Length: 162
Image (cartoon, helix red, strand yellow):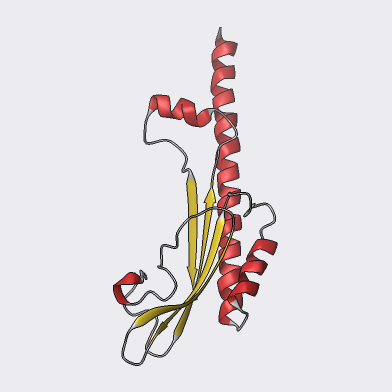
């Protein structure tokens, strides 16, 4: 009797460890790819080449077959203070929209973390990574039966500003 209770608890712990471990690995891979792309773009690499480098540095993530998306953008502030998205490259098979804005958007159509970014006559390089996360164990369904707040996220998002 005791063994059967312990086995159930251990099985739940192992399933949770597997899915949360995968979640952390995917999230860290996204962060590394996002930082690599923005870093390359700020050093003069074209947005297309920066996105290609992001894909190359994250071989465990699949950005084709409708599964993930990378968006690299450049945002400039003119001498008159108007913020504009001046360049944007998208890669991946899914249709996630940029949370920054669309190409050629100006003013309130551009969402940035601060009104001070970028400064006058400067350019800000932004990379966004969207990636859906699907657990491989039934732990999420079990957690949803216990509580609605304990589910894993279904979409992971990372953004880097340089």
